[in-house]
Length: 246
Image 1 (cartoon, rainbow, N blue to C red):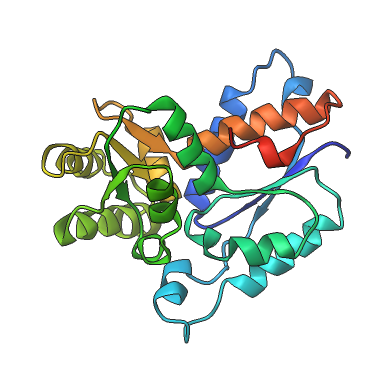
Image 2: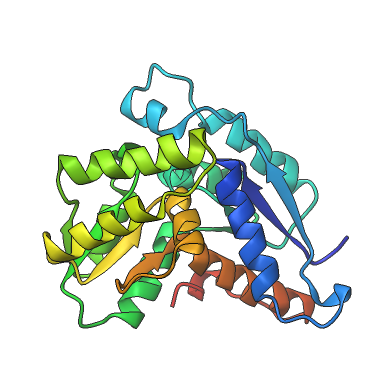
């Protein structure tokens, strides 16, 4: 197979399944051959990203992801995406392990947000404790010129419960809990836009999009960028990866 891309996933698997489902659903197609060529690495045994970020004595997720990147590089994909926001804690180290472009999902998400909601003032961020601690989204949001709100401990507890208790452990979506979190960030903390800084939250958005709040879904955005780039490489177009973030 030539002119394909690689998806590094499995963190968690339901979130990766959501990415693949949206990728195929949004790809314009009338026959099998219209879909994109890609390789999925569903590396579900990668150590917990948040646990390591909060306590570096816990197993690191960098070695297994570096191994994945190097293995896939031997197959020469055109680009790679990592379907885990928290894993971007080691983005620089992972990109340094390969010459293949590795698309930065948080950077892509905030670039899109800046263009889509230029008049927004306060941005809410809901994510794992690991993503909050690594500041990957916080820095992107502030560098784009927006105010940031992380809510409070009660919101964080609800977010963690939705991500871990409902989606990761039970494998189920809790729409009322998700909608309540969005409502609280909007009503109590005056957030114009809410960034979903975890792919499990992207899964929640896919399953329960029926709410009135403005959200930025990094995974949904990287799906659209994957389709755009995938179609370009199929058509033989040369891509300047330094300019893809807009």
